[in-house]
Amino acid sequence: MADINLQEIHDTLIDVAKRAGEMITSAHPSTSTTDTKKNSSDLVTETDQTVEKMVSATLKSKFPTYEFLGEESYHPGLHLTSAPTFVVDPIDGTTNFVHAYPYVSVSLGFVHNLVPLVGIVYNPFTSQLYHAIHDQGAYLTTALGMPHERSQKLPFRNSPEPLRGLNKALMAVEWGNERDGNNWEVKTKTFSALAGSPEVGGAMVHSLRSLGSAALNLCAVASGTMDAYWEGGCWAWDVAAGWVVLKEAGGMIVSGNKDGWEPKVDGRVYLAVRSTKEEEQKAFIQEFWGHVKGQLEYDV
Image (cartoon, rainbow, N blue to C red):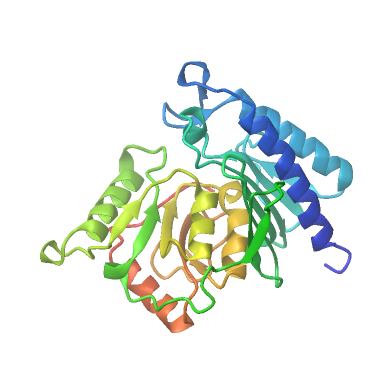
């Protein structure tokens, strides 16, 4: 990895994210002009495709020997390899984008030997940029490009408060676009188990939030504003960038399925936990796994 300049990659990805953000905020999608992929809950817009083409062309021009894996150019049979690879979601939160709900991000990750090393997650509607380099910490830059631009190290609290268990937790979850079958049943039964009262065998978490962007959810856990995030069904381009931000902020990521302590970035099932003492993180994970009602299974 000696010949890979992570700082240069980081700085380039920030510039690309800014350009992508301008394209996203100047677009005006609507539900009537939006296409679908798998079903009516799996949306894609012309802007998704245009942004990815710009990102791909820019990165291939500057780093011609590196691979590229993007959501809109993906096809079945294409897999993440050990080669240096940019892993990109041009618009993470397309459904939000279409509905003008401003929880939307550009997710730009760099992965080598299947390990995420650089992560850029940018919400152009709020001008919030999460960024991290392996072993160099994670940061949130706010008011990007404005006179009062400011960067803050993550997590927000220098001494994160203890992670006291599920019944004290605010968690992010997502419904996904599979609305029947095994994974749907596992998710809905697990949601019920997490939210239900102890009288019905539930964990009674403070609440569950379903906000629609995996990358921003990971960054919320990294910042400490969410305690954890459980996900099944998303792809490497949804999590690669946020993975770096989370890990560099002291968070832990494991499989969303029981006993999966060594998750793969393209494993499609994840549980992210915020920074605190390692023994508290592991105890929280074990408690969470005890409330998962079945096994999430996705093609990879």
